[in-house]
Image (cartoon, rainbow, N blue to C red; front, side, top):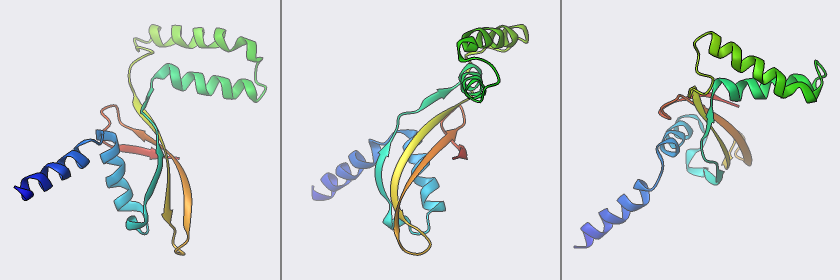
Length: 132
């Protein structure tokens, strides 16, 4: 009976994680210098990446750099959306997902450091394709 309760407790603790959290756990096990020192601080929810979300980030960045006025961002995005549609591309198709993560872990020198990472996942949340 104790073994059954113990197994149920383990399943409850490990089964509560979302798929993307398990992918991050595997990634950290492979990439941290000392995986046993890992302490989660905060992990965000997945944010969708679409052609239009990428266009928005790029357009605002270029406007802030002075390439064109900020008040023309909406007009530029309308042009970009029209271009995608003319090319047969759904401007709101899912390209991938983005998840922010803050954690503490020991570095190469053995000192604990706070790390902030932005993971980019494939559209099925099964593989990390980029880290920033």
